[in-house]
Length: 445
Image (tube, rainbow, N blue to C red; front, side):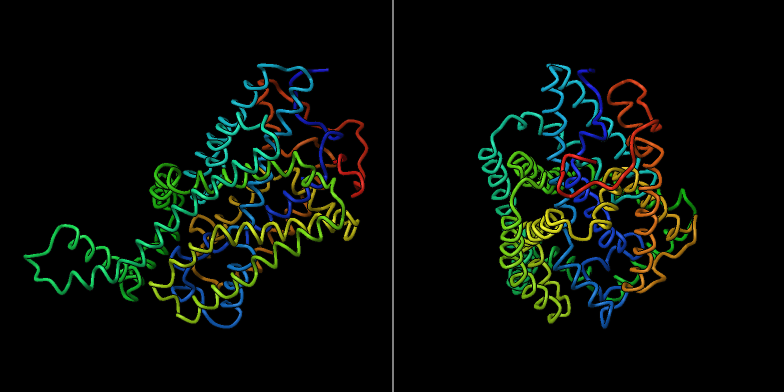
């Protein structure tokens, strides 16, 4: 037996694969808005894509049920993978080679994230995962209790930082209005900056100026490949540098630590009772849904006023934690009880090829929306984007099981594993049986 080798079929955990597949598909419900609409429309549907009827329903449902929650779930599963990978290697006696494998795995992911961000799509998350993963290695040996404490500390720090941000945003207007009452030559530097920040916010919501920025983005996205990647390069650089340190790193570290704890506790491998998952579902939804429904309704009733928008951030971390736990309980309850077995089986196949499916989605979506493909950027209304989502889901759900009938891994997973273990891995299946996994046996793949 090799001390260091990739996970094989009999070592896979079906519940984790199923959750990963669900999260991957769910992420497109948010990302499709960045693929197909101007960036200003993401948080403010009145900017583009429609803010009434089905367009509004889609935006509201996303805010309450999916925004941030799917990435949270995906990040938890990445954290679970940290424990799964290292525990398996250490049980085999790999010793220090475990750290070597782990380091290479994450560094290759960082490189892949750079390539994805600059040459395919600027909404990349792989870079953040690779960078965050580098620091998680030391947490793998902690107990469930200590992992939960670590996650709680990060959660607290995030919310303190968010509270400071929200306060500064909401304080812009009173500070500026107060400063404007003072004669210009008598204003301090801080008062002048307050006025400038206030004006900058107003400009970002000014319909004429916003329209000009949107039209500029639409023009660039409908040009050729090099124009599109050139336009996105600045955003990618910002996301992988300043935004990474300020937000993205902590955004993924918190759920990763929680995922490590939930894996070690037996929650993610579906080892708990059905009643446990039912309580998790009801508790998560009961704590999260009322708060998010109220907050979203308030934002909509204000017509996305710039001085109510910061409150979206105020409830973001709490909302994605509670609703994600509700989703988690629901999905694992379904898995545990063996309901909708063909669907959970298909989702597990998508999850086995999550990296390939993630990159395939980016490639096909940018080809469809950008000018070097079909040029559909900013053409469809928000709700019409769902037809594109369903089409992409169909591709994921059909291609994944068909591919895995012939091959051990998705093509990108195979390349990633070969580079990680510094050895070409077996690719084709020879005599491994193909069959539907039983939800009652979570260790099967």
